[in-house]
Image (cartoon, rainbow, N blue to C red; front, top):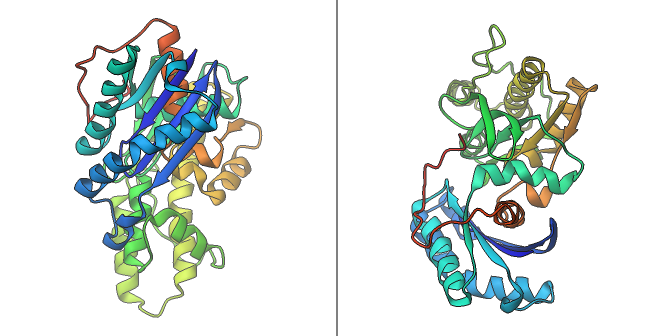
Length: 326
């Protein structure tokens, strides 16, 4: 089966082709226009998707040496995400599916992030624990099978990626904040500032990063001449340490020896190294860097799994900006 995947949940316009679980081509265009605003402007993002989608799909098909007539189905992100950007992608996908008389499937963006790890390790088997950590979500899941997920813990306020973005703004860095803080922190001492870790009692699997952000703000106001590289390293360490510690607790509680890390923060190299250091006896899987941030390869791959199982969406399916995984 050959499936076209389309992703427009936020500020990445993406298209990809999956054939029998193998990605033939994957294209992502990140909208750099938002950097001058320090964050994503939804209306601008929606318009950018509309401008880019058609050409991107054509290019993706050409790279795979395919035509539209070779497609067997279309998968598109249904949610969660920004309503306007989701509408841009879903309307485009519906029109294409109707024109080609192809089945279409609306895909959960969070679920697709989890299944991107099967592209990294096709031998991955259920059950496993997943740390899903991005700009919009920070959750720990027990993944028992396709469509069978148990939420073990999540953030009460800011997501980890959001904490990186807000921390970068306080430090006067660019957007997105995660890569900027990681870059600055490489030359810093992660132990120079003892930033707080919230909800660390009794192996609590919930997260909270709003207090950490406030602590950073107060620290910079009280220490205007502090080494920003030291502060960035310490701030990053506080986030990664909380994520890794709770993931380790979750694996013990679930009894799983395999964990996968999904979402944009999974691209953080310090996190990749630290998780392996803290859990040397566990099997830890990270997706390829290109599949950490938003992409259509994961949408096409998961969409193909569902379409092969006989599941499709009706042509009038809605976008779900607050779509849940379970």
